[in-house]
Length: 217
Image (cartoon, rainbow, N blue to C red):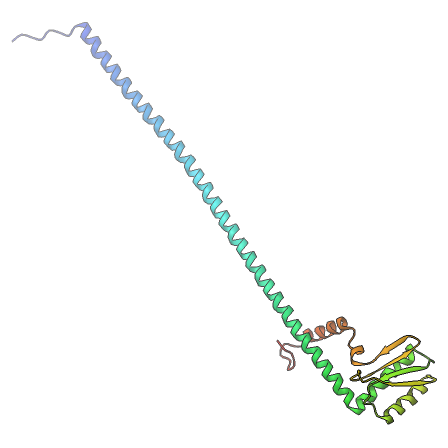
């Protein structure tokens, strides 16, 4: 059996070249894989960062939306409470005016309270219209004896002369006139300062305890 001839120089060089090519090819593949892996990691990091930014933006937007909703709801509740308060105030004031008219009309029908009312009006007139002749316009329901008593009181307060005028349009009270000046002590005159009366009533009403027997919710 004969031996195989030893490889020639050319064959050895060819094998070495193939080995180098193989090693080079393997190295290039590894380098390409490493590059691709790094690129993938860069892309994933960028995508992850963008996703976080989008999530943060979405969360911030949702929080803003919820906060806007909360503020809008609070505003609606506040407006509704204000509307209810205005309606309640209007109802209270309407009732107050009805009650005031009724109370004053009833006071004028009571002889003692009518005398007190008239005497207070003449006292105010003597301060406003001192030592002048008076024209007293009064409800026609006033009796002659009451009128005489009031005229004596007027003269005692310095009024030199009194002219009496019965005015059927006056339901209760009286007016005292002199030289273009009028002291109006009728119901309409006593209640003329509506803003002041309403303000005082509301302040007194709100100061009442909630459990008060006369307070209306």
